[in-house]
Image 1 (cartoon, rainbow, N blue to C red):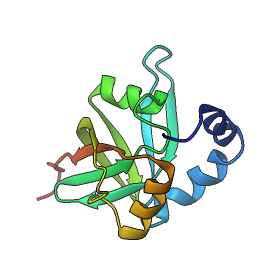
Image 2 (cartoon, one colour):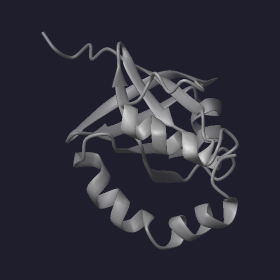
Image 3 (cartoon, rainbow, N blue to C red):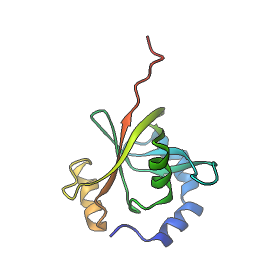
Length: 131
């Protein structure tokens, strides 16, 4: 069972401001920059993001129904700010990994306690501007 929606609302108001400042530089964290499906407004959502071959795995602690997840799925991608860089990501898809193979063991143990086994897989879009 993912975290309750009331906690998501609290985080959006209270802790996300700090998270948006720190997450782009911390290992295992990031900020996903996405647009609202209806409003077209740009949002910056702190997340737990883990490198995987070809892209990233994002732990969906509030479940796949979270608004930001739906925005990224509808748009077919987003920008991920992580470890001090901006990465274009594409091909978003939700998977379930009850064995938590996509994350470090300690993170998997915590997610397991929360019952949050959904992940958003994102592929890193190649940077064609490099020579």
